[in-house]
Structures are given as structure tokens and as C-alpha cells.
Image: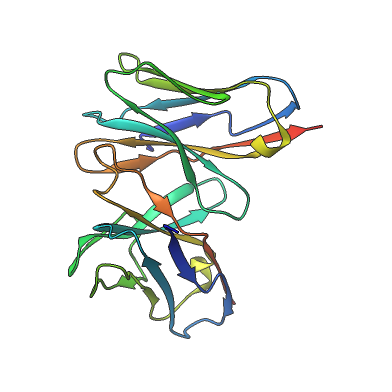
Length: 110
Length: 115
């Protein structure tokens, strides 16, 4: 069973709308959690990192949250743009390994 | 410019014909790894290397080989490719394996089709 579960699998929204992507994990002991953005046909690029002591971090229109007690993270995208269309991958590290979620495919339509 | 370079980007080959996908990074990173990405399965680690001459199996190493003779290069070798190795492959590097706050830097990907 994958230790990092992302939902939804795919999402379609209209340009300008907000959306929230979810990442639930069972990885233990927790070290850090990263969100990556992967444009079609490109390699993933890091958006943000969350460590145990952080519960919110922003990168422009992207805001990540972390609840270490419930082992959940979310990525909120505000005022979506067409360029936000991509896959978003949650990666959770423990003491000696990284676990990848399967990703959420976001499509932003005009 | 800091980057991870993979070659070839696209390749169509036939079953059993040995091939090598090269990966090179110019950031002096110690950690390098290979992943395959298949629809619905996400990124799965094939092999990784913590440093020169040190390699370890990831989650899906069967059918693949790697070597790390120098810090910057980490080639992926398919000795006898089979159709189930048709996939999108990514090489990545990091200062410390991404385990602390280290970030993974990915190449642009190599799309391999085995007929």
C-alpha cells in the first residue's frame, strides 16, 4: 500500500477559480514534505517544502499546509491561471527514504 | 545554468536490444537517482546512488543496471529491454538525497518505447 495518497486523481477548474489538492501520508518518522509541479512532458519542479514545525507556507499563489497530527497536507492554488495546468506531486521523506504520491492532474480551462 | 541532462529524450527500440540512457548533472550533487513514471502509478524509484561507486536498488530495479564511476554521471542501462519497460524515465539529483531539506532536481525525461 502506498504510504502517500493524493486526491483527487484529477481536477478540472475554470481560470480564476481556487482549488485545493490533498495529500495524506502514513510515512513515519516524518522528516519533510515537498510539493512538486510537473508540466506535461517536463520534469517535476519543487514548489514548497514543509517540515514538522511548519503548518503553512506560501509561494506566490500556492499555499501549502501541513497537519502533522493527522498526517495531512494540502496545496491551495488561488486565482488559477492556465499555466497552473500540470500534475502536482506530494513527496514525503522519512529518516532515510522518500515516498511519492501518484499525483493530481489539474486542468485549468479558460 | 544548474541542470540535469538526460539523453536521449525519445527512443524507440526493439525487445532485447541493449540501450543506455545517460544522465549528467553540473551541481556537484552527491545523490542521484532514476525513476520511471507510468500513468496512474506516479514516480517509482529504480536505482539510486548516494555517492561515487555507491549504488542501491530502489522499488523497481528488475531489468535495469546503473553505474556511478564519476560524480556527475549516472547512466541507466537496459541490458535486454522488454515491452513492459516502455515508460517515461527521469533522472534526478540532490545534495543529500532530499531527506533533510535537500530538493530533488529532475531532468527533462526520456520517453522510451520498446516494441
